[in-house]
Image 1 (cartoon, helix red, strand yellow):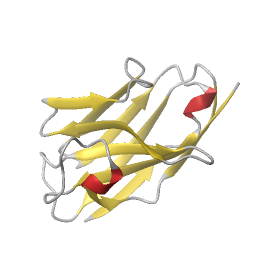
Image 2: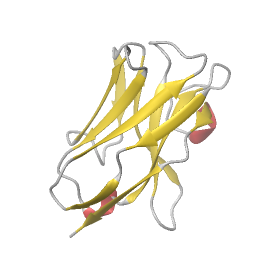
Image 3: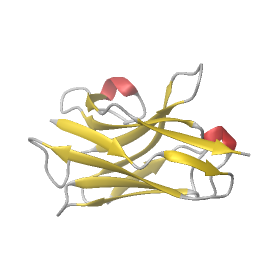
Length: 125
């Protein structure tokens, strides 16, 4: 399984960005995909996840109401649409494929088997 993120960049507070997570290899339209981020000096933190065709979606409290995760199964791509960006959203954003063996809540990095290299999002004040 290959995971490739794109769409990061430098924006101002209040702006929007849409990140993409392209999947290839043995995945399906119901593959669980999570978004995480690592801010400078911090751990890799959960941001959002999507399970199935979108019937199960979750967000961290810090982004709930501002970020939206959705998928386009024709393109085998999962998106993270980020609105009202804040300087504290600055981080490297990672996409990951949920493990078929260890997946529980989806909130922890160890529940995911395949990771992309990340895309940098920088929000200036």
